[in-house]
Image 1 (spheres, helix red, strand yellow):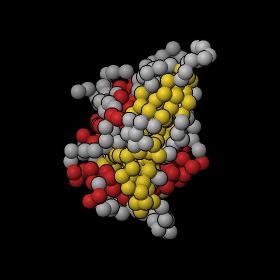
Image 2 (cartoon, one colour; image 1 turned 90 degrees about the vertical axis):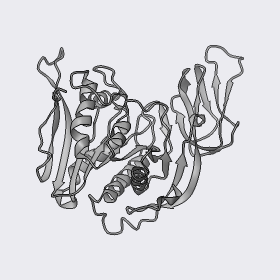
Image 3 (spheres, rainbow, N blue to C red; image 1 turned 135 degrees about the vertical axis):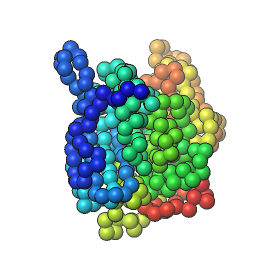
Amino acid sequence: MRASPISATIDFEADGEQHGFLKLPHSHDASAWGAVMIPITVIRNGDGPTALLTGGNHGDEYEGPIVLSKLASTLKASDVTGRVIIVPFMNYPAFRAGSRTSPIDRGNLNRSFPGKPDGSVTEKIADYFQRYLLPLADYVLDLHAGGRTLDFVPFSAVHVLNDAKQQARCEAAMRAFGAPYSMRMLELDSVGLFDTAVEEAGKVFVSTELGGGGTATVASVGVAERGVRGFLANAGVLALRDGEETTSRTTTLLNMPDGTCYTTSEHDGLLELCKDLGDSVEANEVIARVHDATRTGAQPVEYRARRSGLLAARHFPGLVHIGDTVAVVADIVERGIPVSSGKFDTARS
């Protein structure tokens, strides 16, 4: 396969703190010999594990870009053992546009792996992460939120893997992130995901959903900041500050075992949610109504939960379209699991 057209302006093997770019040549009307310049920070201190931290995989999700930008400007080489690679704006064109997909090629980066070195701009970015950054990493954290069309209870997440040892390491890292909720997540379609690429490479992978609505809150940023430090501590890259590890926090373990967790709209209209995020839901309970917005006097369509559990996600805007996910109900596996940067008892997993 041909080499990537992307070049890094930093040296991944050099000790110290480096701030630079992943430079992707891109010729367009406004710049004939232009380039997409993706900011990157590498902080290295001798031998040790490598943690790859990414945000902005989707451009309308902001906790990752905020927290990783702050980390890149404050973390020092003397703080770490090994290496931290920080990419706050993974799909940089999408981030600059404030959109889920790239304005250049409409590419969804999180559906573009393994990518192509001679493909679209989005495929070229995916290829560089797949072939150049993933081989460097031992631990990968990809920070997501709901963007403009979804809202979530704040959770860190792993997928159910075939390798039990890899699964246990991922679950330990997920719980060390210490979000209020920890999810064993079911994807409706895992083809092309960054998640899948990382997991198939045998790495420890944790993702998140930390809110939504196309914005970030004080609370969601706080969850992300504490979570990143817990994740790095679990990886052995970062020592927590005095008192940080003994902070009394717990997480609730959730599970999405099958497709009945998802409720999909079969109508266009005005959405009325009947449950708030975090509420308990009973099977067959009405969780949403869709009102006909083209006339008055029509009865709304009721949507009922297909299983009991906790409302973990909801459609965000007030208008809904056929095919949109209206709500996600997850099983409650266990409440009150202590948060720690150390290894967890995975026997309950």
